[in-house]
Each structure stands twice: as C-alpha cells, then as structure tokens.
Length: 430
Image (cartoon, rainbow, N blue to C red; front, side, top):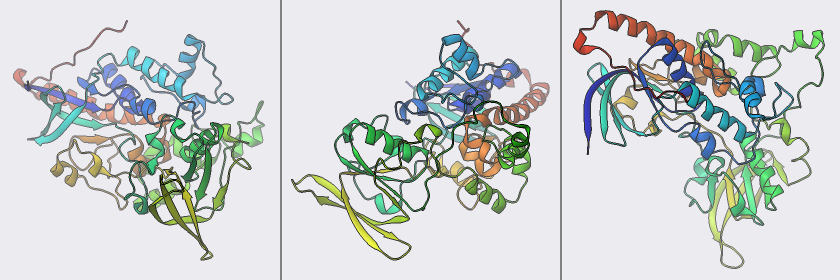
C-alpha cells in the first residue's frame, strides 16, 4: 500500500558506494538530518570480476568518516587481512568487506531499498521508494557511481546479449571457458577480463585502437630517494606532479575553463592495467593493436551455433574479419544523465550539461537544479580525475556537508516549528 508520509527531510542520498557512505558519515557527524538509500558497495559486489585487484594503492582506497578515521589499513589490521600502503594489491573482496563494515559502523541509518521516482514539488523534491513510501526532501544527492553509464560502441548495440556484453555484466567468465572471445579495449576492465579468460581456458583476442598497451609498474621497492620524491610526489592518483596537483586541488581544477578540464581528464591517467597484470598479457594471447571495429553481424557457426562476425580496419586502410562466439566490450563508461530513469523527465532536462554530457556542477557539487547534487565519477569532468576514484570521496563529502550544514542551520533558525526537519531514523551501532 502506498504510504505518503508528508514528512519533510533536509537531505536524501541515493547510492551506498564509497561516495554515498562517506557523505552520510559526514552528515551524521555534522548533525544534518538525512536518509540514505541503497545496498552497501552494491556495484562493486555485482559488476566487478571475482578475484580482481584494485588499481589504487591501499593508502588511496579509504572511505571518509569525518573526524574519526576508519581506513582500509584499520580494517585490515582488525580483520587480519594483508595490507601495505603501496606494495600489496588490494583484493576486490577485501575492499567490498571494508565498505560494508564502514557502513555498519558509521552509516547505521542506511536503508537497503531503491528509490523509484524523484520529482520536483515546489522548492523541494518528492521521493518515492519501492516500498511505496513517499516523502519530501530539500536536497537530493546522487551518489550512484558509474553503474548506469556502461558504454558499448554503437556498431555493436544491435547485437543480442548472447553475442555482446560489457565487462560490467560479468562477475565471472565461466560461461566462456573453452570459447573464442573478442575483448575490446586496453583499460583495466578489458585487460582484467582478457587475463581471466585466458587463465580459465578461454581463447581471448584483444582488439584496441591504440598501438600501445600500458601496464602500471609495481610500486618502488624500499625507501624512495629524495630526488625521486621531489620530481614524482606521491598522491592517491600516482607519483607525478600532475597527479599530486589533481589530488590536492580539485577546487582549483573546477575553476578552469571547461575545455581545458575536459582535455586534462581525458589525457591524465588514461586506459591502463594494474601492476598485477604484469607478465600476464604480452605473449599470452593475440593482441590486435591499431584496429577499430567497423561492423559486427550475427552469423551461423560451423555447427549452426550463433556467432558474431566482426569487420576491423586500421589506419593504413587494411581490413580483416574475425568470427568469434562473443564480444566483451571493455569500452568504459560515459556519463549520460538520461539514464537516471528514476528522475522525472523534466528534472533530467533541466540539468545543464557540458559538451560531452557531464553535468555542470558548482563548488558544492550542486547541479543547475537547486538542491540537486551529484558526487562520484560523474563529477570528474568538473573536479578532475580524483573524483574517478574512491580517494575523492572525502573531498566531495566535505564540500557537500559544509554546504548542507550551513543551509540546515539557516533553515532551522528561520523555520516555524511545524516546518521543522525530522531527524533521520538511526539504528545503534552494534
């Protein structure tokens, strides 16, 4: 039965990944009434391959709880898991467990339900949950990560799911054991997929438009020399001056002209595999460098089975064809706000966008729709590459919390008692 409570909330957070959980922890500490919806670390637990290692170092994979830190290192020490700031790759399963424990400790108010609809109502937003509950919120923060933005090239979209998929569609690749598979891309997700396929007995072929495939080098072993640290300062994004600046001054990045921001985000930290892939790609599988997909069509295989024929071309004008059982597209993610189907169409249309579809955001991560915010990777076009990684959660949580806390203080001082914001329901931490 639909339950319209008529209650008025100060802030609602949609999403319970690193950004949503960190923001909720900050708001809770600041005493800002809010509710947060989603399943903790859901995208990480459902759209990343089992056995994967994070590209980010351990020290750069922390969620932010505000003044009381609870780092990945703290979690590893408490649970007896392996950890090193730089030398031990972080297992996906350990990072998911860390996020879930963070939620238990710092976000006990998390409600594991989906928000099905958000629309404007006066100067607020009306949210409807899958349970049928409906309520008003003054502010809404979208922290859904990239799970909605997986991108498959247009020339492949007509193919059925049996012939083409995105890397985000797979937790395991067991269904491809012993089969020929074409893997598109040279980023972490595509290279991870290719390595896993090869190691379980599939026959992957990697196709990339670039002539180069980059694999991150292992961390510098031992104490780094002073000259090296001065030339290559350490940061959550890596060891370089550009990475250090991007990590420490995302607010300055946001003030740059949009075309320059776009170029910097695109060029910095481009597609690359993590250091754990060293020695597991070159010479282990066919790699077609400098080739692009022109066309793909479903065909019948030798025994009548469904297969896909892929036509390729390179810059020299050469053509070739490959017939395979499946294409896995490791072609990344592209921000497309129209995929927020839970947002009313008029709301989506009201969000000002940059040339390539990313939202225009203020210094407090607010969109052009007053009261509607967006944090996480979709904010990278405004705040730089730091926001593409969990390491940016602390900055985003601080900026949004400061803005909402100031607004809450002002509203609390001006509102009549009947308009007071209701405090969120909090379950005690056990």
